[in-house]
Amino acid sequence: MTKLDCNVVNCSYNADNCCRRTDIQVEGTQAKTSSETCCGSFAPKGSGCQSCHTTDVKKDTTVSCEACECKFNEDHACHAGHIGISGGHADSSRETECGSFVCSC
View 1: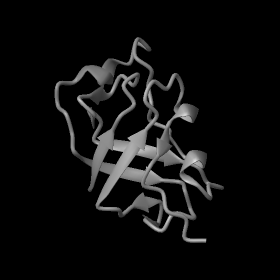
View 2: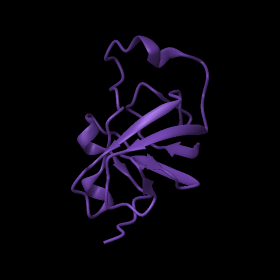
View 3: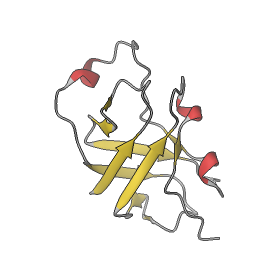
View 4: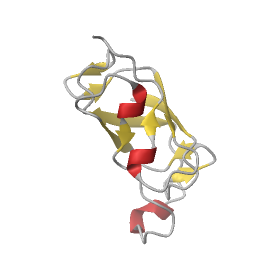
């Protein structure tokens, strides 16, 4: 599992810069930079997400990763010890990114 910090305050899963999910999906199959990635698990606040309201805040998170060029991606799973999802006041998943992406190209 990966230590996850998230500063996407408009996400329903965010609680004090932690994620309430036990798993997330990083997207960006063609990504060469972190800005070409995004958190596919983003759910905007007020979206009616039923599972977003659990009180369990997770620091250890399973991260599925489609960013094939990231050096931490092994068989579509993130093996970085720590990642940060950024996007501040994002309104959609495309406004988020994996700040820990490092291109192996």
